[in-house]
Image (tube, rainbow, N blue to C red; front, side):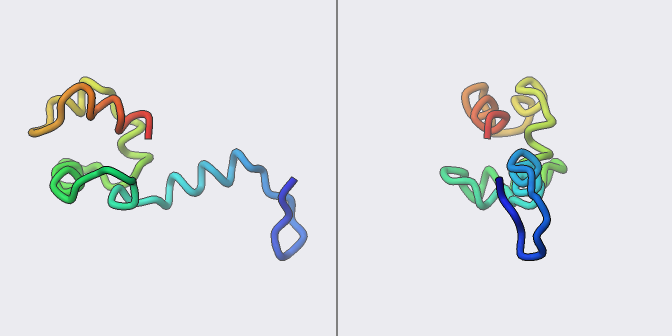
Length: 75
């Protein structure tokens, strides 16, 4: 159990989901600046955006193959 500074119970799953929503793509280890730029140019600005996409959708972007797309969706 996790309790914040105000004594409120924090659900670890909700905390993880909030972290994902607030994490920028550039914060992910192993993602190049070029890949971040490609994703941003195509409307993917957070991990949440990428995880909501399918591998097939990501593979349609320039420079993203199936292996990279699978890694991104699983980030």
